[in-house]
Length: 222
Image (cartoon, rainbow, N blue to C red):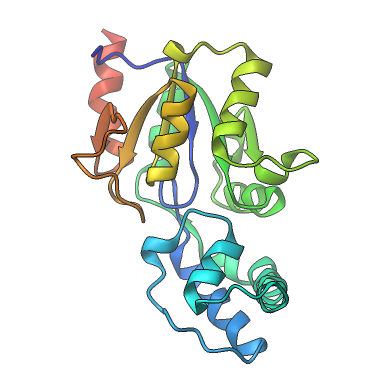
């Protein structure tokens, strides 16, 4: 497999660029308290990635739609006002992304987070301007079904070939979305998910931090 980097990068947010676990955990606790429901699972690390309704369902082992409506409403109320402020970039994220832009790489972000919160966090972390576009499930109506659909829409709108694109993420969902789109995948092991070494889903790079892209940038710059 070629080790050269493509021109286009699609970055997941939670667990890839952003350490969002503290804020999500705090707002999930607030939601269960407000709805007077027991939170059966308090370690949410491996649950981060899917839409928040799925996380709330797993955290409380709840399937009832009315209960989930209450939890999601209270989560949004807390997260949109204070929970999001506990989200920060992983180390070196800003400097690596800026170097990528200086080298001519094209950066896009895709996320299951709501658009307004994604933009607010990226702006607060001073990296919003580094992305040409932020695509979230609610970036259109009807909403995107998932990341596979987001990737397909981006490729079609910007005429990006599969060979000239790399998805960077931290979950098997990200890896499968990239595989379905026929693009390479870089797995960030500092995140919240896992992609097993024996998985049939292809992984082009396994990186412990975003700074591990730096030697690859140097190779491409030669």
